[in-house]
Amino acid sequence: MQTEKEIEIIEGCRKGDQACQKMLYDTYGPLIKGICMRYTGDLEEAEDLFHDIFIFLLTHFEQFNNITSLGGWLRQITIHKAIDYLRRRHLWDAIPMSQFEVNPAVETTHEYDGIPMEVLMGFINQLPKKPRTVFNLFVIDGIHQNEIARMLEITQNNVSTIIARAKEKLRKKIEDYLKHEEY
Image (tube, rainbow, N blue to C red; front, side, top):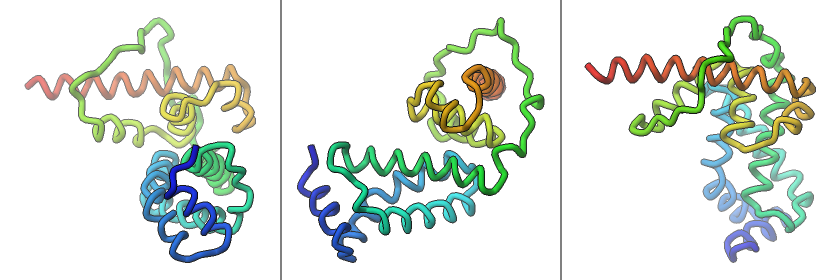
């Protein structure tokens, strides 16, 4: 169910009302920018992507169906556009997965309480584009592995391997961080 503010934004954006477009920007811009940053890992790229997405949203607002929440619709479009952006710029294939080593015997389900969220997000942003993208889709955005495979046009086994490798890389970064924090 939409709030009054969301209804005003939806109806106004469908009519091209600039005040409602500004409300959309002010209300949902941080969400969209955050997703862009998570997928690109670079502020300049994230701003380019955000600009492209916002223009797309404003010119395709009639596609919003009122069945889902406005925030959910914006999030879904932003994720898909971020994946398209990485593909168009050939950034998806730029990092060979052989760069990562994974030890399947290592437990990667630890909880790391007490580490600031900014530090954890920084570690995620340090991952190369391919593992960062898959990790974001699976862990942060909660998308199922089969859907990720479909979106990225890779096998589900490849998705599982990429997730495991990303978790292993993050586990090592977290362990190093915790060792240095103890001193």
